[in-house]
Length: 70
Image (cartoon, rainbow, N blue to C red; front, side, top):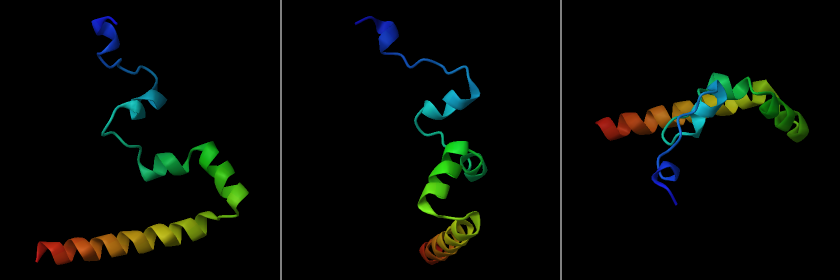
């Protein structure tokens, strides 16, 4: 195996940037992905329902982080 196989390749397409460790797409980017829309449709989940779950998770996380800070 040559050294070039050990060095991670730099991605050139915008969609490939998420392949590097530690980099995550924003929630907006995930929610605009057509595949996410298809999975949600298949599972019978609406954006309104998902938005409610996300809001509850954010609130729960915020509360737990505030308790840790005190």
